[in-house]
Length: 81
Image (cartoon, rainbow, N blue to C red; front, side):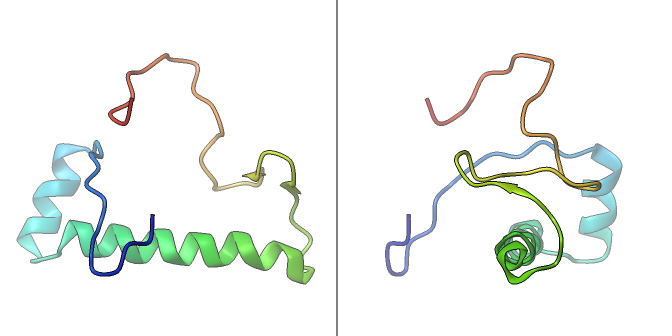
């Protein structure tokens, strides 16, 4: 979804202490999240540049330490249904 000048609205769940500290330091959670996602996407896309990590080319899922698992054991409701 790359519509010029528009952004998608999503919901994320964060620990309350993390939100409190973010507000204390005046951090914009949306901006920090956006930058972190851009950084992670760049990291994933660099996989094809020979850094030795594996990406499931069919499902575009990454499997390396420090990366969120592709599925959760707990079922959850998605906000984009």
